[in-house]
Image 1 (tube, rainbow, N blue to C red):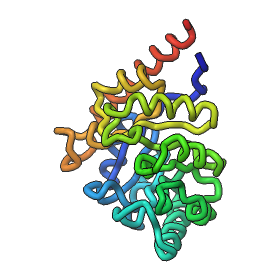
Image 2: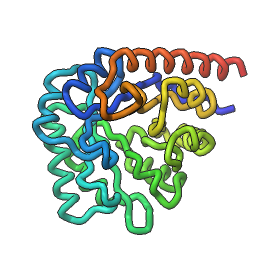
Image 3: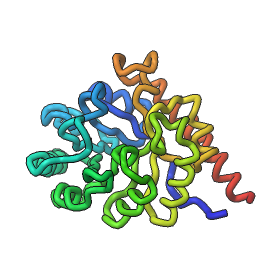
Length: 248
């Protein structure tokens, strides 16, 4: 069996404001995804929120670059705005950006991505769940890998939630190993479900939002105790997985 890439377990937590970000850091989150408008699936946060968060936490912050929720297809005006948002995130001190774009046919929009990322200049890059709306997960993954500077894809395996897409996620993880592109599982992840995700897919980068909030709802702020529990579960599950791989 192919040995997994030597990727450290990473817990990424969604934050919508500075209080969320501070709580995520307090709980031990490895990375923060900063967004606005979670009711629309996550959009670009305002300048003010970016400035507050990036000045108050030391954990790496990746800023969502998504101007609207109508689709993952973007006009020339959208691309200009996204490019400016990338520049702002970089200048304010973000560690990375979260971005994605598709053509009308559901393929990865390379030209739009290259234009937006011209301002990234060394920032880390995550390709977001636009991949789950693509015509083909594997073809999208292969195309994304050709860009060279995208570290990982965030995906639920093409399903509405991770628990429904475990088989697809396992296949994407195996493909990602050959392409040297990471896979991060996100959408509908619960703390109790982390062990299953890791053991069945080999994915050790986990993205959580409502799962580390009271009542599992974005109506409540990030709970640092839930973040700490999630990270503990991830580290334990990852260690078990790697030990199993070494014994095979």
